[in-house]
View 1 (cartoon, rainbow, N blue to C red):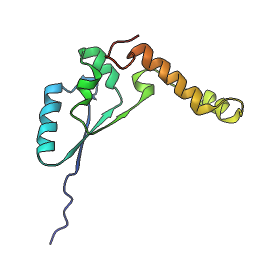
View 2: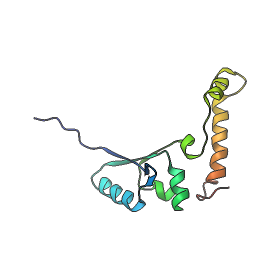
View 3: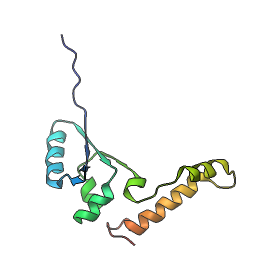
View 4: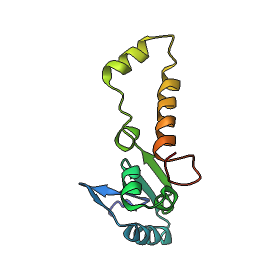
Length: 121
């Protein structure tokens, strides 16, 4: 008897080498997967780029997926240089996580909006 490893999750990226995966293809893959009890995951590292380029709202881009991962440094330009990380981690006066999260919140509000739509503030 051969061992089997049934597919439980299909993971997609919404871009590949700068080419955007058409949303119609994403929906077709998702419908196929869900009809067979397979979960869908989005590696949304460049999700905001796709929304900006296509004009598609974030909720529409995310709808076919059961889980989504996001990357703030690729999507919103929230790169924290290594020397800043070092300063933040060694300074007990600065709550590191709060500072980083606050910066990301500002970027989200500026580039994406308040959550009522996909437009920037």
